[in-house]
Image 1 (spheres, rainbow, N blue to C red):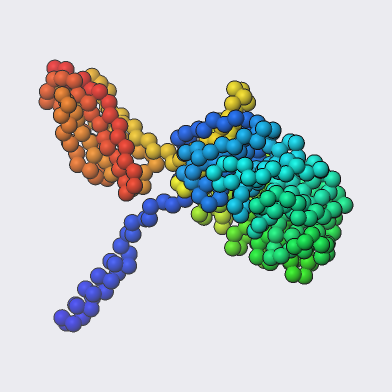
Image 2 (cartoon, rainbow, N blue to C red):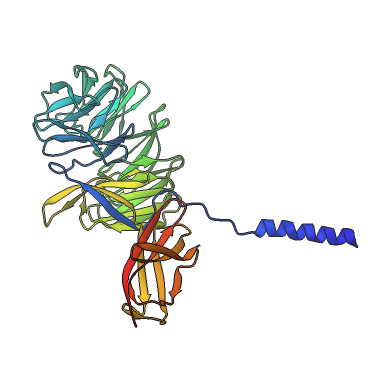
Length: 443
C-alpha cells in the first residue's frame, strides 16, 4: 500500500514538473510598437540604400557626401565630400569604400574617410558597385563592365556586353556574373574573358544574388529565375505580374524579393515554389532586411512592415509619417531607415527603437480629500513581464507604498493635507521607466 502511494506521489510530482508553466523568454528581434528615438540630418537625399559592414553603417547622398556611422548608428565617424552628386550607395571592400559620382569618377575612400584614389571612366556609370576580394566592378550605359584595382583604382580590364549594364554584378569563385539590359547573363573569367552566357529573354536591371552555387535574378518580363552556376543551366523560373527594382535576399531555405505589383514573395530555393506572398503598402524599390526570424520591408510609403520569415504573417507595422527613401537596416535592437517629408522637403536617417512608455491614471483625479480613496492604475508599453512599484513623494521624501509586484494598480488612502507626487516605477529584466503626477490633498 505504501509502495503504491509512493508511486502515485512521484507520478504527481513528475506531472506537475511537466505541466508547470514556463516563463516565456525575453523577446528577441524587432519588438513593436516602435518609436523614433533620434534623427540624423544629412546633406541631400540618401541614394537608394543603407549599407552595413564591419559594425559600421554607410550611405551616400545626391549632394555628394558619403557618411559613416558607428555600429549603433548614433555617432558620425566621418563624412567624405566628393565634390559632385553621388549616383550609387557606398561599396565597402578590401581596404577601401568605393562610390561613383555624376562626373563618372569612382572614388576610393579609406576606412577613416580619406581619399585614396579617384578614377574617371570614359563611359556613363549606371550600376551599383560590386566589391569582391581586391577589386571593384561597375557597369555603364554603354554596356561595359569595368574591373578596378581596389588599392589603386586602375582599370584591370573591361568587358563589352550587347546592352547597358544597369545591374550590379556578382562574383562566384573566380567567375564574374554580369547581367545586361540585352537580356543576357554573362559569365566572365578573372581577366574578363567570356566563358559563356545565358539568354534570360528580357532585360536584367537589378543586382544579381549569388547564394551557394546558384544565382538568382529578375527580368523585365516579370520572370524570376534561378540558375546553377556550374552547369549554367536554369534550375527553375517563376512568373510574377511585375518587374523588379530591388535586389533579392536569401536565407537557408527561401529567396525573398519584391516586384512592381507591390507583392513581396518568399520562394523555396530548391524548387521555386512560392511558400507565401504578401501585398506591401506600395511599390518597393528597396531590398528587404532580415532581423532574426523577421523580415522587414519598406516601400515608397511611410509604412514599414515586419513579417514572420517562415509564414509571412505580419508581426507588426510602423507608420513613420514620412516617405521611406532607403532599405531598413537592423542594428539590434534598433532599425535605421532614411525618411523624407515632402511637405517640409527635409529628411534624414531615422533611428527606430522599441517604444518604452508608462502612463499613470488616477480615479478620481486630483485634487483629492483626506480619507477618500484614490485608485491609481499604471499602463505600460514595451515591457516583458512588467513589475510595478508605486510610491508617494512629499517634501523631497519618497516612500514606497506598494512594493514591486505584477499588480499594475494600487489604492491610496491619503491621511494628510498637502501637495504630493504619486508615481509608479515599471521594470522588466532589461528596461525600467517611471511615471508620476502631482496630487493635491485637501480637507
